[in-house]
Length: 410
Image 1 (cartoon, rainbow, N blue to C red):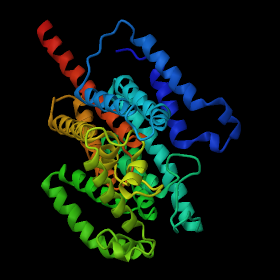
Image 2 (cartoon, rainbow, N blue to C red; image 1 turned 180 degrees about the vertical axis):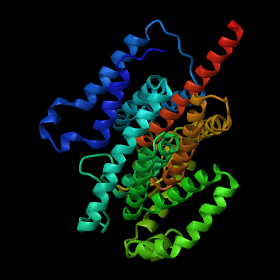
Image 3 (cartoon, rainbow, N blue to C red; image 1 turned 180 degrees about the horizontal axis):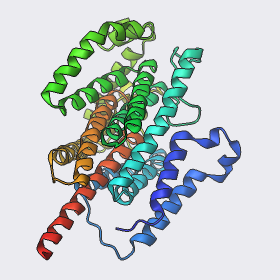
């Protein structure tokens, strides 16, 4: 399907979203360049795709169900005006970009360009984070953040962005044809792992372990044994170069009493009370973006914190049906990517699509694990991965359809 300049507008929007150039060049803020890029992407896509019939994939259907349930929650919300504003200002934009990505990334080359752009942006995040750590530039709570104004300024957002993109750097290294590119992308992945460590994010660490395990399981047994052996040999060196108090920070994952800042205990209490809120309103929830009000109703007092868990965020705001749709979306994406990773069509294009599926699968697992501890259900991180995964599913389907047509024609 022809996409015209829509792809390039989506790529430009992504650059603005991640890097936030208006934070460095204030005059750009008045130009609303992200909004202009999104609008131009929509217009150019519809102009290029007019008279084209495109079927809906399973992931797109589940995203529509989630969007429908979010809209249905607004009239019954604890604060309808706030839920409506949240949908317009945040969730609707994420949905638009998801559907655009799933339809403008129509070739393997398009996906590779998107991977490379996300890797470049996250390398920038990692370099800024490492620089802040080296210079002692800390946010409150004695933790470093990413670049000012971007989507990775918060330490946990920084770790989440890095952990969902470092598998894409490994993918680009895998499919690269030159030694220089392979080395470059491996270095990029290494920088991102270092950025995750200095963020001191516990969820980021767990997500890194799980994503790494998934990637490891994709390898032949001989390579797994070799990598594990090298890892064990290098373990004392790795521990020696870890930041001070990093291991103490990780201990608080299983022993929240040892957290000097008390954040682990607060988040545990928020998750427990959010479960109570879900049980009190299992069908509709407190309304889109209103889990804080749901917590207030459970506790019977003013409280302006929020649950730090994407699944509980959806369940407490939109109800259990929305949580089931969210889980179903995850399951469908993971199953489809696993299927595509195992498909061997015996041509160069399929040999590049298969690794992409495997590394996207690892990135999704990273998000799932980190999302258990972060309120990121409607944020860009997941829907960028979902958009690329959906596009990959569509590309593989069109490739299969083309081969069937060729065989019939001959």
